[in-house]
Image (cartoon, one colour):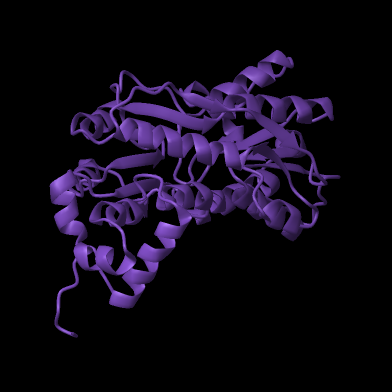
Length: 333
């Protein structure tokens, strides 16, 4: 009947299974045979059954929701871990990072089961506020922190190694003025920063007998117009000896902006300026020339992120995981 409230028992009766099996299918909490799964899904569709998620969360004390907090929502390779978590019954919410404790309190009040923090904007104390509230954090670690608690673990590509390899590669090809462009909304204090990217950049230059120049580390990336103005000023406002001959960008999107700006200035890539991106996304082969980029296994990253998140939710201790990186060499460098 149109006004009749359909229950889990109604679905179980129509599917010929127990109510527990219906719960297993809905929550993706246990393995169910394909035959029973199809029967349950067919019954749900026929009866137009809508699980009461609020009641379930009150009973299980789980919201079945995970937040991905990002500085940049253009990360197309985040689709895979989201899919893996969805298959395990979790809904993922993406949100831009925001400054201030109000944002931290909002995350806590939403009662997410876990948070993937893909931002370096927040202090150790702010992350501790989240973990102390009982919400586990998987951290995309790009800087050093203090003690964060047992329910925090990092899953991240080995960006330190990636930057080192990129700088070494550029120096090997004769570049001495290499600019480091940090990701949008990334927080940095330049050469003296405790960020992995900056420390790797400085170390690689010094290992190659080059003294780092703070003017070549661009960290004012709160807005794209600042970033684009910097590129123009570096190439037009500086004398030939001070201009960078290569750019190492924090992600492929920024690398694409660099290539576009250089072409507008009449510069050739890679003859006049070399460009390297980070993440090896779909953009790398769509650009002309094709983009050299720091690469890592997206499948391995997605599996590690998903497994670590679920383990932390279960209350287990997890060690930090750094995914091995390489350099996908193409035409831009």
